[in-house]
Length: 164
Image (tube, rainbow, N blue to C red; front, side, top):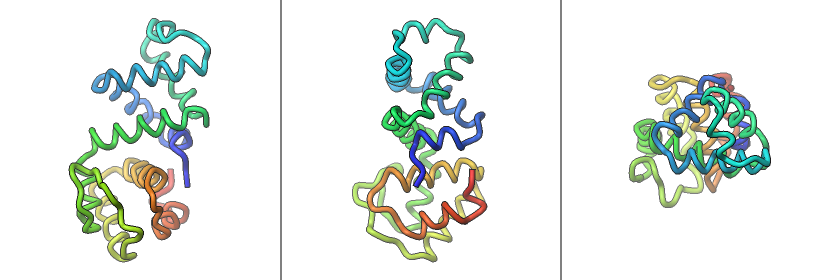
């Protein structure tokens, strides 16, 4: 299982930068919390980061997000980005599995799903969405939810289509 901070290290740098830029443009409270967490790790005030050119600031944020100490911050950023920007993909995956949801959010995940349904749902996502996006989503889904589905974990480790 890949932790959220590790996902930022494995995903393409363009995607990681897009996530941070999305937070900057669309989720100001989340972005400010992200800057505060990075500032705390760097032992500077958030205003120091805010005064840096945005591209330089985002490089520092990304480099810092890849640390284990920022797991909760990285997980929150990923979760929010997926739920708010990629709702149709999340909804399609859950609907393919026959899981009731509201805008990609599930109250109770079943302890397991049928192997064939899961394989088909993943194939459908890969046919419709960029491979890296699907891979990040499925890794985040697997690491952030209880229970973890054995087949999903196995596919994330062995299926070459789901490697970053």
